[in-house]
Length: 268
Length: 298
Image (tube, rainbow over all chains, first blue to last red; front, side):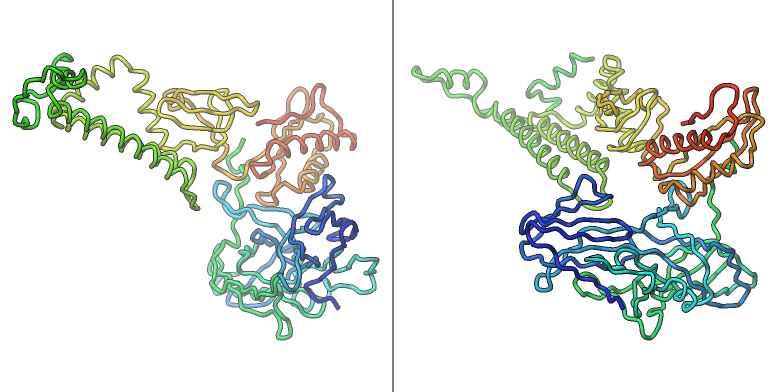
């Protein structure tokens, strides 16, 4: 069972370390005591990374990226009046790499995004927010989503220094309790989760986000709140230096049924 | 009128100056007086020239203070304060300090503020005739600084000039074009022109116009175009890509594919998508119109 963070010893001066991260082959070569060179398919020209002489370890952590998350359920999601139910979605993760040592601490160096990071605009075209877009299946429960997305030991094979959790990390599962407080059934076409509201938890080999509650307040408006740990046994992931990451508990309002203007409405 | 003003600026006259300093008769010059002492005596002694020296000192101190303030404001580095705001503050502070020093200096040499204001009105009329274009540019510059149709660093298009705004001066603004030429545009011309500002929004729409033969399967073409656009990683999922059948011409049917992208990636993605669309239609054997094929509308 994987346990984040994943620590891999950095090569000695003159030596190289090959890794497979998010389906990308990378090569770390230690050119001197305090410099490493990163090469690979995505870094053809190479990246020279400076560091402290005492850095001995590369530390890897999953992350939800740097942009707010805009989730588009693949199926239509209808929430009847005065009803509440839970759904879950899968969210591809980033891998954050940091260098350092246990004694001196770790510094974030580079983020490896998933193979494809689609983006979308939340809000009007003149003032919206650029988000990371996720088009995902709707799972009826957290457990159902975990069964689908869970890391499969049989299909993975650890070769050399590569770690299957780095090469093909399973997506994180995000569970949301939907509550329709209105007297009308409501469609949900999107869920906008600010990054400050989301943190990652770990249970076994599964990655989960904190549990969210989405209260539908009207035809357009919804309120999103973090309700803490997704399961009693899950543990929150800490940052590179082992410090806890605390999600924002304040509720945020967003438009769950806002239909974007594409310019077609105004003719040619 | 102008000679009157000049008379008022000449030293002490009872009607237009501050109460005159009590005149003390100058002692006669000794026979062995130096050239400097003789010069000083000829000018009326220290008492007579000290107001002028003080005025010069005030102007110098004012200029130095204005320069220092200009530099201090330039060092402001706080979130929310843009280069444009800093430029406006710099110019405002510089001219206020210089103006204040100038008024103080004039008062020191005995010019009353009320007379100065009256004179300023007349001078303004005179200058307005003489330097109509410059004054118009200055006023336009002030409007540009406060109305902010664009800021320093914005990408704008004025008539045929497309580039990044480098500076907004009182008389003219400078725009650096993308082939690295600096174009100086008079502020008056800027105020009168239609300006397209490309930096105000973070997303832009690309329209790709595709003409296919009237015999082509339009539904398939539409699906193909949508697939090309959805597959491109930089195309925004929302607002979602769309394909519309625009019109039928003698050469074929015109379809318009519309996608939204980040403004910063506009040119690159437009080029990539156009290439992909042309290649795909070739590969899929979509019948061509009689002449041409795809062009991009900007």
